Image (cartoon, rainbow, N blue to C red; front, side, top):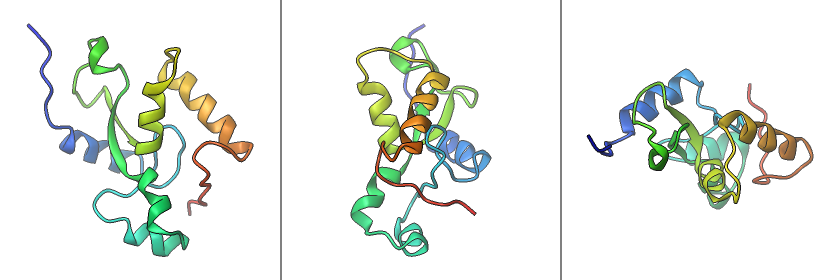
Length: 117
C-alpha cells in the first residue's frame, strides 16, 4: 500500500506542545499562528521571525518511507526544516541537531539566538 500524505497540523501541534514551543533542532522558540507575540517578546522585526515559523518535520522523510505518525513527526522551525532537506549528504536527525547546535554556539546558523526562559 502506498504512503499517502495527510495533514500534519494536529501532529505538529502535539509535538510543539511536547517540545515546549521550541525547535527540535536549534532549540529556539517558534510561533504557530501569529509571530507578533514572539516579535514583541524578543524585540525582533517580523521579517527575521519568518524563519522561526513552526513546521511539522518528518524524522524519517516521507520520500524515504517515513510516515505521518506521532512518533515520526517533530516540530521544527522553517529554517531548520528547509536546511535539513537541502543538505547534499543525508544525516540522521541527531547528527543534524549536532551540526545546528555547533553552528549556533559559534554565532552561525539562522542568525538568531533567543534566550528561552
